[in-house]
Each structure stands twice: as structure tokens, then as C-alpha cells.
Image (cartoon, rainbow, N blue to C red; front, side, top):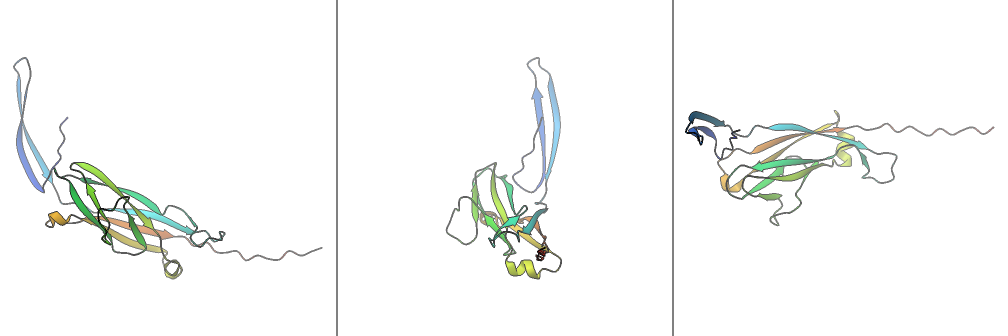
Length: 172
């Protein structure tokens, strides 16, 4: 099995030579191609306000998702994670700095993770006509500014339950 773990965008051509103890030799041409990051998603969130609860922040449904992200480079790198919609929050378990932009340092050839919380404001829940709030997360690497950002699309579905009015019961 041969795996290709590129460290730059473009084509790679090389030759693999395999020899055995018996003296056989196999020569294989290898071609690899690495493209820019392809947008992913949408990550779908389902937000159902729990009207029966006395807590204003009570929610039923999936409103938190974990995203795995790989550092394909042979050195440790810091990545900035931003979102274009304030109804989504980026959660990084360890912040590398005190900046307002969440950052994560990922060791070389390793995976890191962060979470996205869909937490729309009450005004947004009540004013959204199509019950969908979209967003986009972008991951950039400050030390590799020539790279395009990694993009993750987000879709938050809001299901508002109609409150059933209580009807008084008649006493007999």
C-alpha cells in the first residue's frame, strides 16, 4: 500500500523502486496531484426551541458539531478559525492566544479539532422567514498566506413549535 500525503499544491512525479531479497526489482512510476482545499458541508444543525421549558436557552436537537482538521505540513502550524455569522460560535478547547479569533496549533501531519455551536438569538429565531440560517467557517494559516482558506458551509434549521393554548375544562 502506498499513501500520498502532499505538502504543497501541484503535481508530483517520482519513481518507486522495490527490491526483494531474491534479487528481483520492480520499478513503478508514481504520479500524484494535490489540489486546493475543496469546500465542505453543509454541516446541518437542527434547532428546536423547547417552549415547554421555563429556561429560555432550552433547546431540543443537534446544535453542536465537532470538526476534524488535518495539518498536512511537516511542521507545527497555527490556524485561525472564523465564522461569517454571529449565530454560530467556534469553540476551541485550548486557545493559543488571547485574540478574539479562535486559533489552534496542530502538530505536523496530525489532526486537530474544534466545535461549532449553533446558537441563534431569540430575535433571529422569531424573524427568520424561511427558518434557515446559513453560515460559513473559514480556516486560514497566517504563516502560509498564499493558501486559499479551508471552507465549511453551515446550515441551521429552526423548527418553531406552535404553542397550543390551554383550554379551560368545564366542571360538572
